[in-house]
Length: 200
Image (cartoon, rainbow, N blue to C red; front, side, top):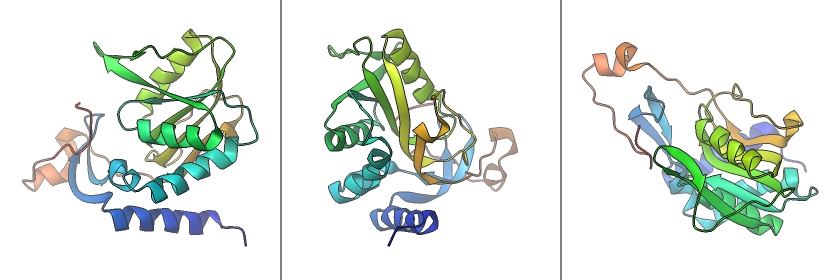
């Protein structure tokens, strides 16, 4: 029996809860905004079984397309990119931030004409993914699609893929977020914490 989207979301949410990856509290997001919920994908991706299942959702969309290389922004997207590439039989590389900008280092290259899948763990504004897409274009690669585990934008973020279906999130939610000067959690005397891998 085919799994419905609702059932898939429930299954994914259960993985996050079991691994302690869905956090409740007062969090400082990369954007500078505050939120009462945080998806710490690293905690669910530490389990290869869960990583395989989550990345398999992305891979199912692209398995019949030629993917030469999967590229992810460091650090969060690296595991997603590696596992997706493994399942697709593609190369896996990552971009990292240096002097404030995403760039390919460590001898990583994208050859002109290579079909590239960009992978990420969590997308809220999509800033890091847009930067990686810029790298793909600069290197002469062909953007085949974008896949990520959690979409916190509620589907609002749109990437420049040829077909809307070439952008896929395993789990979509509309995150509650507050600007620092309007945050009710701050007004209640709570201090935000930054649980992610990247500073603001």
